[in-house]
Length: 289
Image: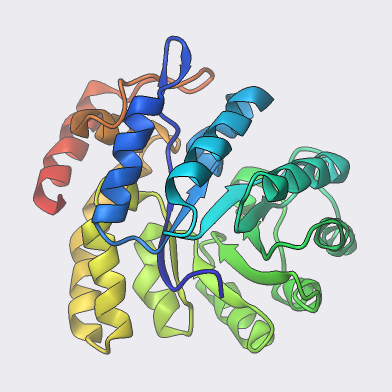
């Protein structure tokens, strides 16, 4: 298991010159100080689709130098090209990543057999543990539970980030992959329900800006205080809805700006959050931070 509890799907702070390393440093300190269990860089929330290779390498290098040995560092290395995903995964391994998050192929997509071949080829090429990332709403590809059970037979495939939003599918995934791999919630709004079925935590967007709250919620659950964890899940639900009322990471970067972790820069084709939605989001943030 790479982590148990909370991994933050970190934003990438930008400025007019590129990556804002001063704010990234401040953000990483806040994460460590507020009890998260792992850091994911270059996931969807980090906007890697709009970053150059040099920027990606810079973020990996900076994060590894700062956190290596303190928290597990997961790097998003997925692509719709298997060859490109292998190349990026090898690079992340060479640069000191502790694990990889690999999203399903998007745009050109593939069959379930294609998913098995895709993940097997990547897993054969590296020596790091891999988390598969199932987010069909973005990619148009759904890893079916039986497919993941086959993928998880590979020694390097250790987990799945499940963001299908389909609880019955997630339960079936938990049932079929038990003993082979762990399941992490990929949706902040259903973390406790997934953990109640046997999930081991959350790869969270919300924990960028409320890391102590999300960490405490998971800690309470795993300590056996299910009632408090459930109450916290319900308390954060309005905030979670606001975090995803516009395309991720638009809202979370607006919240991060309010806390000084971003100067507000978000790269096209994404745009700044509307003032009306931001007003609601920031009011809710104050209640949870």
